[in-house]
Length: 99
Image 1 (cartoon, helix red, strand yellow):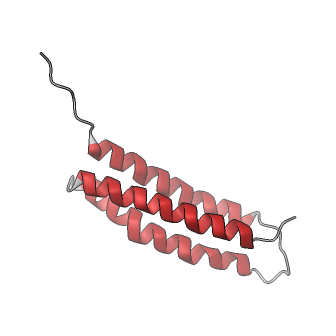
Image 2: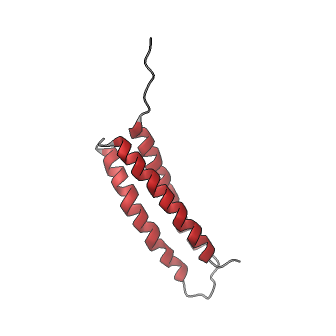
């Protein structure tokens, strides 16, 4: 009998961290293409909460993946970061001016 293979949580955590990092980088592109609105450039203030989510969730996840510590916890932290990104991005999309 062969035992069922357990999921490799380190790879899953790296995939979640990579997804969060790529989304964070995409937000710069998306914010750069927001219509000007009143021309003040305040849409760039959205970078700060998104950067805080990246710094609080995904930088520690990358560190923990790199040193191969707490892979299950790292996966949970990464998924929590993706949820935080989704909540903040949904709010920001409502705030950005429409074309």
